[in-house]
Image (cartoon, rainbow, N blue to C red; front, side, top):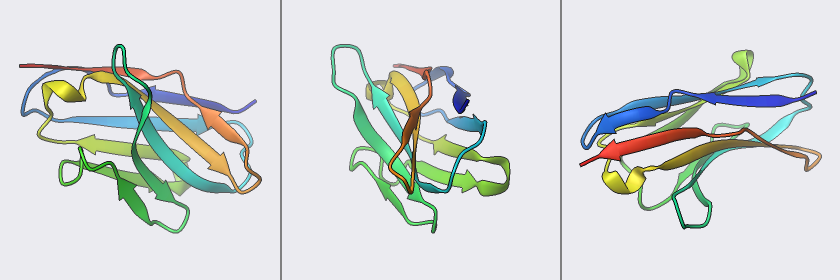
Length: 116
């Protein structure tokens, strides 16, 4: 059974940094893309950042220049380094992995709270 487990969330003051991790366990066929999403209270889930198996990355405009996504294929782990955090970054952050076969896996999320 495939599981994605996020960690690294917590409470941080505005301007601070956090590093989220998403570790995948179980048998996973070739991963096409790994992504981080977030969902703030009362809002829809939104894409934050993504990284393909080839290393290409993309970011939401709201986090460009502040967040960095990276992956460690050997450890089946994807990271999200978040710098210069703002109160509007407060949300539950979810990792998502999509295989070449189109199967999508989700973690249960980790809460990030940024105080002003």
